[in-house]
Image (cartoon, rainbow, N blue to C red):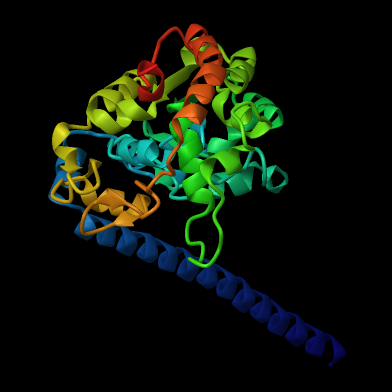
Length: 343
């Protein structure tokens, strides 16, 4: 009797084990079947979503992975910087360069190398607009050139980076700084005259700091070879922006993309603005702060400059001219600046 019960028990156990084994096999089969269906369905969806060009590429054997990679847009670290000088047209220069189809640029000054360096390269990268392969990411912070530490950090970041510097008539720059500093002051406030602001005479620390381009440009050349540095003139940009853009395109190794139809001369302002009828204008509106109706830069561009009495002007010319000559000798070209041509 006991032996019969043991036999029955063994048979029941065998049946249970067989049922478990079949359950496992069935589960594996169902899982595999569902996975196959999902992949098959997603493949069908991808086929349905393909454009005619995609299907043609598939028939001709084009590698779809490489095609998709070409259109990926990610934020990239800059490979060109506008590093100076303030009140020399850096905003207009960056804006006009942004007309090029192969240049992208953040709207604001990032100031990474002299103010926010501790935030790290990933933070710096995140400030850049998306770009595709082959495009140049351009960043503008004109105060970089005035900091020897910032220049060293730029060199450590990328010793092969391209640098653009723009200068202007130093006396006009002094006037522009005065106008900028006292803009929006209440009418009841006393605004110092240009002579008072300069320090009462021509040879002061303020005047020399603004007028001496050669010293900071020399610091750049101590680190970077000449072929990586382009020095431009604000006056040339104002008078003939297309010619300056051609020079910048050659410097950056880019094909000509900017044309004269991208600019329009604004008679009331007295300088060139963006052509609102240009097909590139929608891109510019997103990257430059301007008057969308006129295509001109903000109210800060074209402020009225303070008057300079003739005696102070002569003193300034005599004091500043040697600094200009040193700059011209350093960069291998001269700029025609009206305050120095007249005397």
